[in-house]
Image 1 (tube, one colour):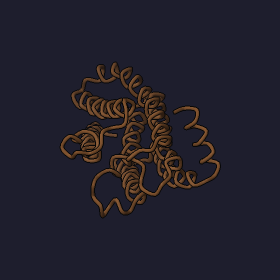
Image 2 (cartoon, rainbow, N blue to C red):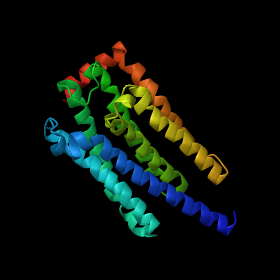
Image 3 (cartoon, rainbow, N blue to C red):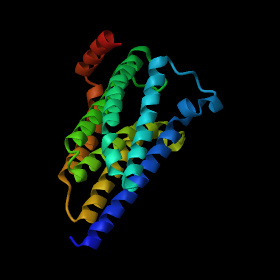
Length: 244
């Protein structure tokens, strides 16, 4: 690859990540404004307990951390970006643990976040898959930290993985009526679009991105089908009895 082509590719990727960071922040804000960030302006019910506040704080910290890491790369402060990796590890670990217990507590005690008509124990499959995939993608990103091409694409997958909860809460009734087809469909389309864009820009298919995207997309129908099984209900009942 010629030097000019390599530079153009790096600039294109930096613009892509900057756009992803901005959209990530805007979607999270739009989705959680009424129930978390701007709830004082909407008069929504108070959050149920310290655990939910901690979960919201950690998720917000992750969005800020992701944006900061993108900014450091764009500013060519690669050494600081790499040193901040330990912050990412600590934050990701805390998010995984707190997210798990928050999801289990919501399934046990009920939550306004659970869609109407869906038993809380059945819905538990959705956040647990989110948590498991985040841990998997972030862990893989750490494994590939010395392979930038794979590392940064896996971090993009962590963003796509976190979009459905925010998308589902954006108060657009006509879209919310589509349910899972909407809030799982948007990241599915984005994942496919990212694969096509990345392949065309680089002239080759990134296998790590392909595998991660397929896993993410396949998880959507899988978690829905699993949630309706008797085996899942038994597991969810056991889990909420032991962990919450």
